[in-house]
Length: 192
Length: 213
Image (cartoon, rainbow over all chains, first blue to last red; front, side, top):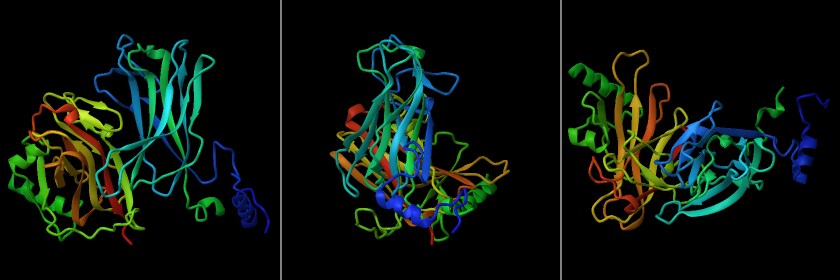
């Protein structure tokens, strides 16, 4: 069978799958699905905290004098059976004193019974380094999605409790979820 | 007004319900209970299920089960008086508005079977109530949209962690062309608050649905 520019031979694909190799780069896996949030669409953990929006729909703390914790929650809608490979968060960090701290959580409860939420930290990351725009990976181990018992979300912390924040010097602009659809065989990859 | 009610009944019957399940105009008490304070709003109520639908007790809910979850923090107040604190789970701290809403995004034609509510009720005076609501409008119609309370459940009698289910029997059929679907929570027994803070916590709401064959 001739190899065309947009078709992968079954034998080669089978070898790659068997070896556990990802045929594409780590940031763009085969059969990817993506879900993105604008920074400003994060849900505050406290409705009294003021957030403002920059020109790119990013979010930053609107009252630097407020010392309550500034945290935004980004719930993830992922279908059952999918795998969440990682989260990529983009923004701006021009602060010498603060970083954007990021955490990827899974919270689980029994399927058909009451129970205290079991919150598990899956991955973390933070902005750092050269002032300016940043792009950070959060969580790099694949997480199978189990929506019958668990929910998934990203928390972005602009400042911790009892700490003033730095206004527009620290902005969260995008939270992008990288997922994989398990229905690999029947995807369009095999069609011309 | 009578013509509008007839049209609203027909729209509610065809949108988000099946022929076997009837709807009726909401009473004033039912309207206020679900946070519909505007007398000009068209509000209908889907009759409650008379039998409990059989549910798969396997961990995954069966091979055809699909889920969509809304964390407590995903709920937004029906007006700016709603206030809350928390992370994934939230407690209402408002003095005057105990209502909040979270939108659903379900596939067209999906059949909603159950809506499960997880939370914590430490209050001896109040209960948390969760509603499944549809908003439907005929394309191009000059009439206001029709709201339908498709089902509700309360934490009444609970002490601590709770789990309750809205049973939709027969299932609610999703019509994305004419309707939108949402979850509405009320954090107190009264419709005007004040909320009871940490004594009433909403963890999450999970919608279980399946796609028709």
